[in-house]
Length: 439
Image 1 (cartoon, one colour):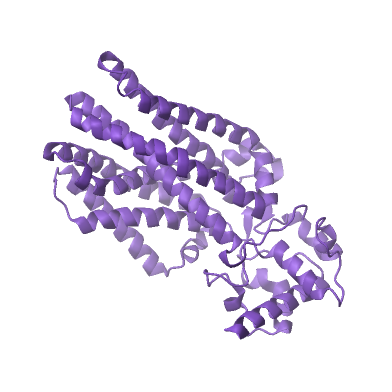
Image 2: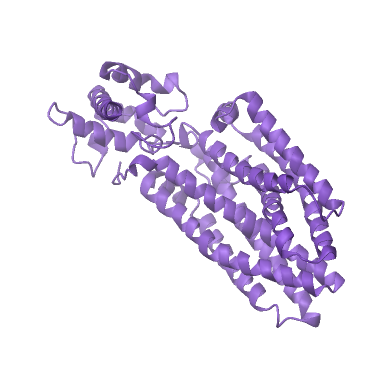
């Protein structure tokens, strides 16, 4: 209520945050973490065998890891800050107050990661002979720092869905050391390695020319995959069991699939990835192209699914039991119902509802309490009101809004007076009728 509202229209505010977050996680997990682990493992294998061709391939990977992480990775990271700050300033402000020192530490770790990556890349030719061990240690330190960045951020993300007794104690450690932190960190760790293997395996067909070199690389990938897939499954199950009861019930719903489809796709996908790992460990230099392409695509979709599910099972909260998804504090709902939401909105041009400004007031309320998840129209049909409110009368909307959190528990309660309910219903009805009438 203290900040201006920004509506990204057809794209949808929630969609914009989701797309930016998924893209960043893909880059961070597959390249910065998984790619770094595989690159350093490959350099170590080349060092043990005195294989210069294999070392050259590891060096080639380091160039692209450097380029991607310092451009697309860094920009999408900034993109997450930008989108969350302008769309959910109350939420990101609360998280910054809770986790100020954790985020500051993460920034220091990230700077260290970049310095190590630059050092690692630019010392390939300089650190030869006995200094090669120093180069390998630098690579190991890079892997640790890349992983440690994820460890800190995962603690913050996990606290959003299960902050422990932080709501009562307001203790940093109660929030950060929540029960979902360790299992979600382990899940992301093994998912990152799996993702790295899945993305890099198809590249071997084009960039590893020597048959013996390809044999070594694929066996290395296979070992990582055979270890990571079962541990990812086990830690994922552990993570599921540490979620609040309501969040556990929403997992399949959040994926948008039926119970059978959800189980079938995920189990079959992980099984096929494990099979690929066994085939790679067998040292085969020829393997089904379809299987490698499927593994790469499935691993990217799996991390996308995880991020979508993680975001949705928090509903109706953005910080569990503290702040709703629209930025309204749980403790403020009754006060807003009594005094009015518009009266608390410092930057709103409308402070109370009148017959003359009813539609304008409704638009302000929509921007304040709805656009974090919904848009009038857009690509995500399950969230757009041209689909959800199609055919509804203004009276039906006004009757539904005060009860929507009881009918659909994933929605926050509307925080406003009866007159504000009617204003919001009038605005939604007008906009939906106009858009559907135009079709």
